[in-house]
Image (cartoon, rainbow over all chains, first blue to last red):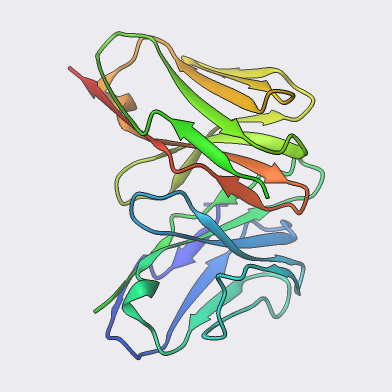
Length: 114
Length: 111
């Protein structure tokens, strides 16, 4: 399968714990994006990388959130001291500049904070 | 600030009908517009992408149009089937390469 993959698919955690999600983009896609989607809403942009450089960060990305893409391949999104309001679907996408700028999405990681 | 609105929020129609979903956006400075499908609790499936220079795209029973000057797009679904039941989301790629999303239209096709 050469699509975008995300792990884990589901995560249940207790309030105050730290969680980390992983995204593997389509190979050769140098842009990688993170979005968050809460129930009944459209996704909201969190951050994006071009290669290993984090170029944009939304105001939604509080200091409890950190994203990395150390070698310009896979990316991780960490949430520290989780809160119930962090419960959402976290979506990752990748794209290849010039190829219509089309973003291809992974299946998402559903986070539930108890 | 770009804002995307989808109307209606929900739609229920009998099987076999043709239907139109609407999407509007406030800033015409976009690279493209995409329509996605999302099944309950699942990820996103890209249906159609229209470049800013294009007027429409077609795939099977789906046809999407784009009028950038008026900030509108429509998704036309012909001969609807129960398997078309899902939430349909539109998103525009803005000048910062961020996708700005509508809240979606929840579609139910009744057998």
